[in-house]
Image 1 (cartoon, rainbow over the protein chains, first blue to last red):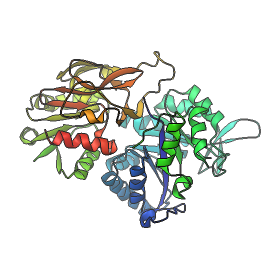
Image 2: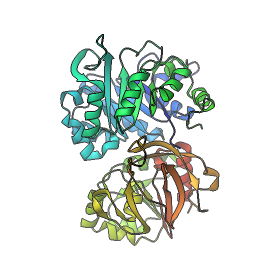
Image 3: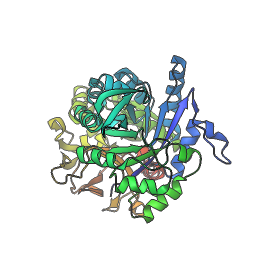
Image 4: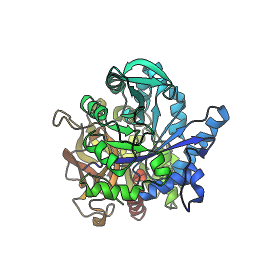
Amino acid sequence: MLAKRIIPCLDVKDGTTVKGVNFVNFRDAGDPVELGKRYSDEGADELVYLDITASYEGRETFIDLVRRVAARVSIPFTVGGGIGSVDDVARLLGAGADKISINSSALRRPELISEISSAYGNQVCVVAIDARLEDNGEWICYVKGGHEPTERRLVEWAHEAQERGAGEILFTSMNHDGVKQGFANEALLQLHNALSIPVIASGGCGSMAHFKDAFELGQCDAALAASVFHFGEIGIRELKQYLQKENINVRTI
Amino acid sequence: MSVAIVKYNAGNVFSVQCALQRIGVDAVITDDFEALRRADKVIFPGVGEASTAMDYLRERGLDEVIKNLTQPVLGICIGLQLLCRSSEEGGAQCMGIFDTDIKRFDNSLCAELKIPHMGWNTLEVTTPNLLIPESLRESYVYYVHSYYAPICRHTIATTDYVVPFSAALHRDNFYATQFHPEKSGDVGETILKQFMAL
């Protein structure tokens, strides 16, 4: 049976892991390659690397990092951040990334999704969506790292992305992100019901039970988290064991 | 030992080369006919679209070279599909090593079915073979594909995704996996080592 996936997300700036990685007895926590290798050894199913560098030099450093991850890590990884063209995608896939993730650039120019998927297949194209549940009860998509609202609604945009060739939707709830009270399970279920491609949940987990809820109530295919893993609050190995005990199908190693 | 990875227009060759390096094997990526014929082992990987890939191989005569190789050959993902008779993807006529026709997953069978089949799924070893030892039964391997090889007389391992399909095929010197051993952690490394030991 297809396993539910657990995906640690690493923010990278100038070749270094940011977002306070705080492991006891792990000197290489600042090195995104070694950190990724460690997560992989603990049983992570995939990795996501987000490039949050703004400068051109930083971008080149990131390409080099992608190459080193590909050499070191034997599970799939997605890269995102600042991808605006098929040429950007070509460079990242050429460096060994398995998938790329696009966000604001897809909302600005939705044709980018079809350009990427027709060049490299749907499976490489992850469309990330940051959305907020507004007071009127609508989920609205945001761009620029959640700073600027758009006219688009979550489910409608996710469906359009799928029709244009997205292979997966990575949905971050801005209401839930950082709050540690659980994922946005109702919105996840809406996405699950509306889409025929996998959905990755992001934003809000603070406990192992939150993952279980996202898989059971939200029916998501994968769950992504950053700080609970980076701060060692939840170990991937123990998370997998917990989920298995709760009858959720996960890969244990 | 010399190992050649077939260079063509379906991506993913670099990942395979990296995975081989991790198990201590230096492989060359080449489309040179002689280099492919002379190699001790040939890997035919791929991520892409079947008919475009097949057209590319045919235009360059690489399909004939691959079909007539006599050393151990390992097809991966699209590589497996191109070694079958045909594919529904773009109506491609393929190389016909394995007696089966590639089909698309049908989500009219099950509304819950997500396409592509993406992620980690378990192996069932159905025929004793040298590529996937019995000890890897129930092990998870990584898949990403929308088309599959139905079970046929060359099937050696299966995976269930609403329908059981060929996870791996074997005929004479030709082996192939639908999953990506190069992305399947330790299990994948074991399978690559098994292939290198053939």
